[in-house]
Image (cartoon, rainbow, N blue to C red):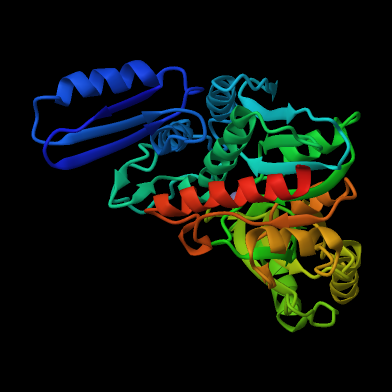
Length: 424
Ligand SMILES: [Zn+2]
């Protein structure tokens, strides 16, 4: 159907799609509302065109779903399920602990080529303490940008890949390999969603590759450092603050650990292009009252590791430091535990998948990034992993996070090209 109404000065241009079922009445409503006004409405509803308004609305709803660690991902998964349903695409929400959720959709094909897995994450970090220009979970649109927590990391990427897949499905093109859409819980905290998906994914077709639509500002990323978060606890003996000689001060023990860590260097060769391994002590907590000698003190350490590194070697180094300190002071007592770990990601940039991927998006160079992703958890599926998506990495996890709407549109085109290159 083509509906074209031209009234004096052009002011509004809307495109719709026959498969976007609720859109047609809206267009007619807008037409009647505006037909005597001083601007024009051009509305196309037909196959081959997609609706930017629908994609922006999807992104706004995803931002409004407020999928932080406190609230869980379930509301975001439901937004995606409804949106995919508009194009007749079935999805499965895997939910646990009340509000935690992954969502998975598989677009089946002739199965003659390896499948593509698009792996996203539903969760976001919180809004933080600083004030925002616009409410962080409103999804406000201003001057070509959509603002909100998760708009770049990575609900923009989700909106773009879903739009691309809906267009492909609605175009009726016959695919030779499956598309698997997956959006995980808990990427920002413990990768619980990705681990659960990998654990339960028996029966999934063989994969040609995994694409993670994280915000890379359209750079093709094949490597990032790993992450090892350690908690060190020193233990002492509590006593009255007026008689410290009768206790063992856990904060004093921690001071000895921190002195040792000042000169401790993690053994590893620098990596090209990831650079060096880094370590930073970022939290400390100890003591309950000024008049009580503390019996416990904790620190949290953020270590970023390189592909060749074994995380176990680092915790062994810590045990050796503790053993040395105990030799000097028999009352010293400490232990180390792993809070979270993600291995480094290193996909062979010269493999066929990466070469074909680069040719599909017209970019010759692959790069590394500073942040980590669920990529290493998904790499165990045995397919090459590439990170590629809309949005600027530098706006993530900060106030006033945004995504440029033109980048969303670009991403849709890129994802369609990738799907057609590998699966048609
Ligand atoms: Zn992310």
